[in-house]
Length: 203
Image 1 (spheres, helix red, strand yellow):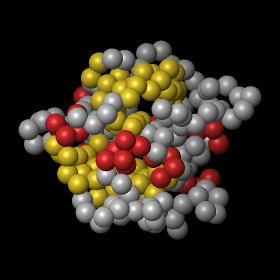
Image 2 (cartoon, one colour; image 1 turned 180 degrees about the vertical axis):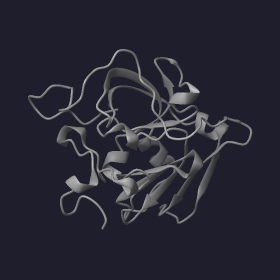
Image 3 (cartoon, rainbow, N blue to C red; image 1 turned 180 degrees about the horizontal axis):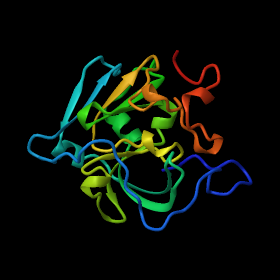
C-alpha cells in the first residue's frame, strides 16, 4: 500500500511535533465494549448502486488484509514513528462496496456518533486497522477497527469505526465542527479552522 510521502527534502517529523517516550493514548468518551455477535460495519451514502451494505464481524474479517508501516501525528504535537498496522485498506473496502463516481468526500463514523470527514483521495490512502505491531489493537486504541489516515493529523484516524459514509458534498465531522481544521495536514500545521483558506472546507 503506497502512502503519501513527506514534502521533498524534509524530515519525517512534521513541524511543531516531537517524539514522546512510550505511546500516549488520547480519546474522547469511554471505551466501548466489543460484542462480535452484534457488531456490524455499514457503508452507506452515495454508493454506486444507491444501496447500503451491512457487514458482520465475520464479513469484515474475511476482507483482504494488508500490513502498513506508518508514522502517527497527533494534533496535540506528539508523533509516534514507525507503527506497523494491519487491516483492510480503504481501497479494498471501496472495491467491495463501490462509491458513486460523484463522491468527493467520506465521513468515517465511530461509536457514540463520533465522526471525521476526509477527502476521498485521503480516504483511499487509509487503512481500517485491526492490529498494531502484530497484535490486536488494544480497546483503548480503537479495537476492533480503527481508521488510520497516516498523512493527516490523528483525529482523522477514528477509533472504534462502525461506518463509512460516501458523500458528494463535504460536511464537517465532530472535531471539525468544534474548531479543528477541515483537512488536517500536519506538514502544513493545519490544526485549527481559523487557519483555513478558501476551498479548504464547507462554510
